[in-house]
Length: 474
Image 1 (tube, rainbow, N blue to C red):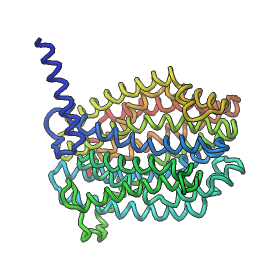
Image 2 (cartoon, one colour):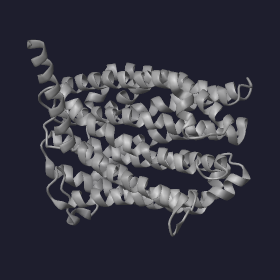
Image 3 (cartoon, rainbow, N blue to C red):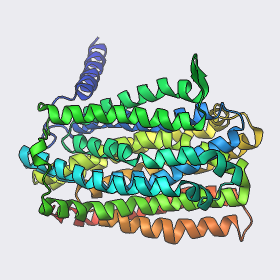
Image 4 (cartoon, rainbow, N blue to C red):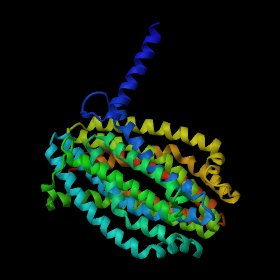
């Protein structure tokens, strides 16, 4: 009887934590149970990142139903690879916003947190407008540079142009969610992406395939559905930021640039952006290698596997975001030991999650890939890619937490250096040697990915143990 009561109490406690996390009640993450703090932040963050990954999966599924899906899938995959540069810039600025807002919240300075948030919006908007203009002009060249075949360039240019031209929406969605996460309000970030995804899921079949009097627009319909969905999510975010009853309350009067704060944001955001651009450029080069050595079928299979992999990696990234918030707030509260304990707890939970996903992919990769494509060669290569790349999932999970621990402390330089060496001086040369001189083709690229990611994680762990990140001032 006592055991049953204990189990009931434990389940009740878990359910209470879940409800509290989803409601987004204001919490003090610098005191109390670390396990509870991790889960209160991680639950909405995992859902948030899961929602972000749904965008690509939904687009991939409906685009795969179109005639000549091989070129359509390749277009979506190659465009997403280049858009990863936009994501990198958005994440870099949002990372700076998260670190600065979390530090001010830890210091109990809500006015300073709101001021930092507003300045980060100014920086993000300026960068996004410049990127959008470049994308509008260079869309067909981008696809050609990525190794797309002429037919793919012809079919895909309008899609790429619209996706690149609406970079402002992507940037704001990431950036404002970074502000909410820094304040510890992870549930608001989750809700905005849920709303954006519901809109995208409803619009995709209508705009891509057509419905009633609405004609199917194919690829351009996918771009419209995603952009409109994300735009609705951004409107929801802005409404709550300016409404006045959230943890970070913005005022239009604060739009005047504060160059001291902007310089501090750039100091954190510049290496943070470089950190993700380094990784994104590596993925772009790998996509190009696959396209060159295996042509459109191999490229479509690889891009399908990547989209599926990202679907599970983004929730793990969401959990690792909890480490960034906890590190930032606890350093602000002058509790570095609690920050370290938070990182260890988050890394343990993330490793368990990614280990389970790895086993699922080992056993069911063919079925998962087959859900998105029925072309035999695309399915074969996608299955092979998914099984090989997932071999490093446990290390991916731990590495994400280490990177976000540095970023949450404002030490964005350390993971940037790790990525530079790990991706550009190890992963890219290894993939090139295996795929071309050794003649393994796309298989060589697939092998290089888990080998490099494992090495990067080990390096990050060793540098984290040195503890220099605890002394960073922002």
